[in-house]
Image (spheres, helix red, strand yellow):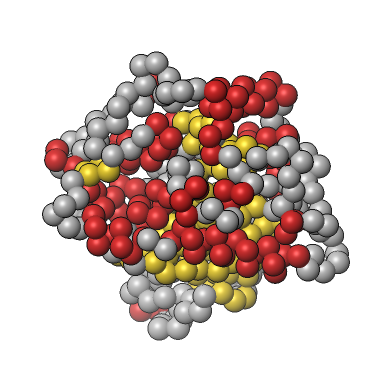
Length: 404
């Protein structure tokens, strides 16, 4: 749980940001981020192979799989993966691939099963992936059924939130997340309940839009009548962490400010002053941004659909409200957030066109945008220096500013 020393540390950071007249002494000037990182087919293929196929990615909430036998089909990386709630209470993930000839085990986005039965030839599997039976076993005289379970995908949880990783050698989720579980604990991840989700297609590379959610430099330009009215970007403090993760805390303009859409909702009693009176935004590298609040938590997820297409998915979670109905203010709160989201996405398609033009040579970042550069430094580490085309590589400059 976030302690008072941590609260004081971040409050001092916000005070420093308000008072500074320049970046900290010695802070480096960022080299250009090459525009080709958003357009080059070779680079995007490397990104897919080393980032999206080897990262811990958010897949769902336990409320979406409440009972043993409940399953959901997850295909965000282009590979069909089945998440299923086992009879032992464990949520597991498997490739949606029969071990016989590759036919799918499930063909709907979600549902309930007692086990998995391949519709092609009838091979049958338990909820734990064990191969239980197959048709005409006499014609497989040498088969050892124990060697043909469904192929698993790494699947682990932070509270009620479920993550998957296609890299079988990835470090455990909670180890990988570093400081994030410490900061997330104050909002009680194991007590959150699922409220709502919706996806929005956007015609740009996934990084074009993700960049916008890693800084608040744009608040006074595109959020003048919304976010800029209650958040003061001048006091924003940023903490860069290993493996690409980061935290950005933007103070409210007034200490007594309260989100009108959250009035009357249940509050998380364990939320610290950082969350109750400011706007902390965690980045679960590479694509999950969550501006946590003591009355509810949105997950903003950025998914690539192609070189020039992506989808932004917003999921909402609430403190446990008990056995009664969902608070009626949620509908208005989600609608208001959607209006803010549309402000953020309004230029994305045009930016994509610009970065593809001969006029665009690269991104010129300032001190406030250092989370973006941190994101790209981590991407190159994951791809590997030897694999990144030299003309698209990032010069690492932020290591001294990454909190260990």
